[in-house]
Image (cartoon, rainbow, N blue to C red):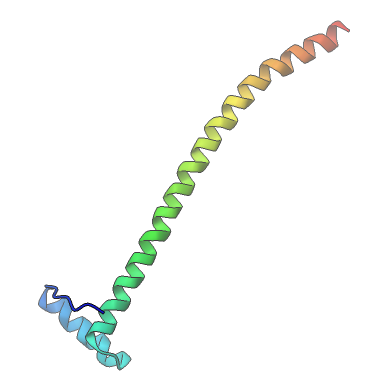
Length: 83
């Protein structure tokens, strides 16, 4: 592991230390866990955003296909009526 130095407001450090005492862990473990959880949450958010974008593209493609097939459906209906 690599040692790093960070700066944080006094109240955040106090809350971090209180949490470490409650969990019987050290400050580094609490901060490490918090960063890991944050990064996992961000990955999930980014995946969700990509999925939404993908669904929007699919919706646009579906609408285009519906328009194209509407012409074919109209032609087929006309052919059936003429038959």
